[in-house]
Length: 282
Ligand code: PZK
Image (tube, rainbow, N blue to C red; front, side, top):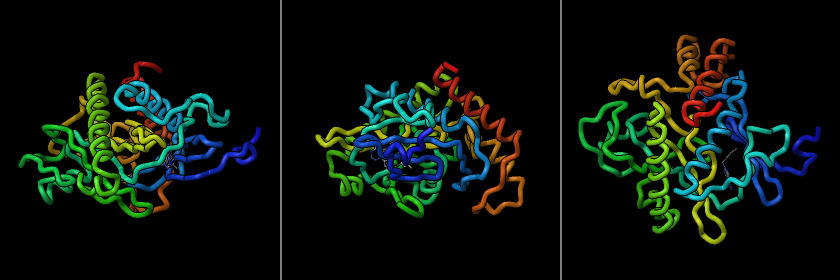
């Protein structure tokens, strides 16, 4: 079989768990079976993870196509070696903002709220605690740092980066994708606490949803039946890996530990269960 180099593809970006290739004018995004916890990629893959996340993302792009157009060209016209875990997409002019929507208080949103009572300049009511549902979803964008951590941006700072009209489009598209996605997921017993979206522009200025959408790598998924505000929530996908690794003598710095087979198997089953629950298909 020809490898990607012999087929004239060019590796344009290698992320922690995904790669991006150029194929002529198109891009091909390839999801691996690598898994990260506490931002560290572990040496043991979770077989099938790349396929489940790719198929979930494709399903969401289809569900959300009437909210905002997206970069997908094809989920099948990809090199055979990546079948099922790659997406052919349109190359866009990417906007330098991580577009985050939050419907529940967790992670960096919780940290910011505890310090200032606000997230990304949006004031929230007093008295909220960890895991609480917010009265309204909020747009909490950040920078896209090449290295190090992303920094919160206010709406006015986003407007300074991309212009006022595009900033307004980003905010409304992000909140609408979150609202529709979270509502559909909640009907199926899954809470989406927050999600990170990326957008780009066509040459004519049309805003397009890019990257991956509403996967557990870009969002916090909680099982509705397990939701207990007031404490940290169990993550639907990586909880077995977290629980197992918290019992180790590991400082959460690379290199991470190898994952035992039973933890891999339980994690595979969680990804598959999430896919079936949300999409209703195997
Ligand atoms: C693009 N990334 C992040 C994603 C990685 C890195 N449609 C597009 N057009 C132009 N650029 C991008 C996209 C998309 N999506 C996305 N960087 C550039 C990224 C996946 C794997 F390694």
